[in-house]
Amino acid sequence: MVGIEMQLNPALYLRNPVETSLGRRIIEKSIELIAQMGFEEFTFKKLATALSSTEASIYRYFENKHNLLVYLVSWYWEWMRFKINIQTANLSNAEHKLQVIIKILVEASIEDPATPFINETLLHSIVVAESAKAYRTKQVDAENKDGFFLKYKALVAKITEIILEINPNFPYPRALGSNLVEMANDHIYFAKHLPRLTDISVSGDDYKEVEKLLMFFAFGILNGSKQVFNPTPNGNGMV
View 1 (cartoon, one colour):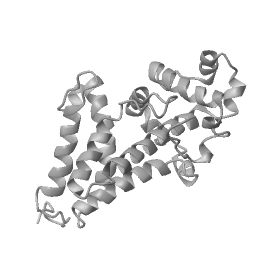
View 2 (spheres, rainbow, N blue to C red):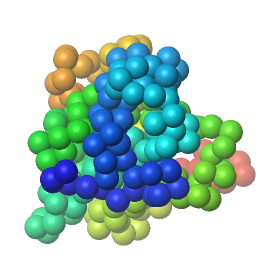
View 3 (spheres, rainbow, N blue to C red):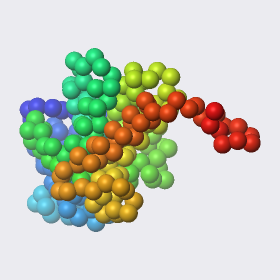
């Protein structure tokens, strides 16, 4: 393989899939199948059939399909952080950096030729529809201790860093950072499938309205009202 190689947590896999031709085919075909049929319908048996291989060969790489999903979305989270680092490295203005970050979060579906076995367009559709299933599980605490979500935390930490450059006194930088990531996915999904849950529309792969929404929220919160919220026993908390 040439190009970008993401270093992911070895706890996610039994054998590093990027090191072998079969492993890379497992990643490539699993992205295609999950995007096509959804995570619930996806099985290793169906993946093996699509690969003209055996389930046993897939189990040599991943213990189960949940770990495979976490692997895929972890790759996505790390890829996003990689793009943010590259595209903001020479920028000095923090607000400009955040604008670039929001654009990256929204335009994540653009394919990158440096990763030939990863279809970013399909992976993005999986992240939009399925990523919450990676960490909203009964096993989340144990998997968190094993470092399953370090790449997500690293992505949010990078966004948090830029938020604090803009406003060092902002009290909720991590909450805003994680919300921007989630909003980018949620409102694409809402616009496409549950339109009464959002105020924007999406036409094909044109996500400009999603970008405008995130810009509005991020900069409205950071640069807008100067009111400070302090909970009080008998008031509304705004002082």
